[in-house]
Length: 306
Figure: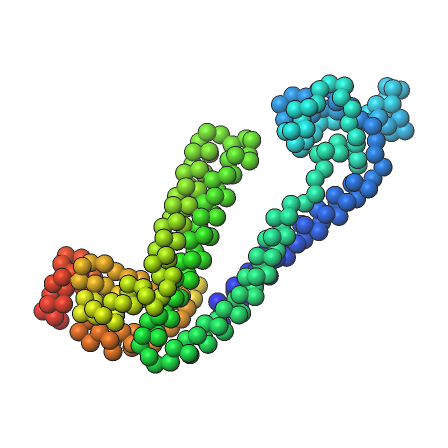
């Protein structure tokens, strides 16, 4: 319940954080474009700076009796427009700024607001759908296995693209920041690349689970359960919110991780105990060491230690 509230609150805050600047920028842009135009001219173009004057004979700052006021400096003029400017070139001024330096607010803010709204809705709807799907599984072990594999798949399908997107956003930062130095470019591009690679790795781990009923882990539980020798749960707790993971370990050293998030693992563990009466359940460092040394002899070694 706490997690659902936090997710919905985060979604509402994201939506508000995007909508407020969008409407504020829209109002500012529309007001500027509706303002009466004035004549201007370029004085000098140097790097990213454009120096210009405004023709306003009635201005109290007009001191030379030639009608021109300034100079002013603008660094927000788009590069494509700046390249076409030269000293003496005419400008159209609106509210004291060159017309082509005014731009409408990015639609990305609206997309962010939509994403926040979807997150708030998902925070309430997803747990309801999940509870219904879990209830439909009943007490049938195979149905429980398929449900948990599907949940694991969905977590990876969500997390992978998010990590890729985050990596891309971090990687492009130095290319939109004209002041970024070589060190910043290398660091941010490298960090973004790591994020993209890790996201692709998570996404690749979801692909074998696209059809949970035919996944390797479900087939192993049904066809070769004797190859599974150890099962344990791992809990990550942050701010009182517990996330559950269940690891299923094979005699060849492989471990399959089921991501349950906040769903209690007891029904899954009960179904696994029913299906795997020979396996060892529970975690301690000695078991981890035995499995790491010789997974094929894990059961015999664990029984001797026990």
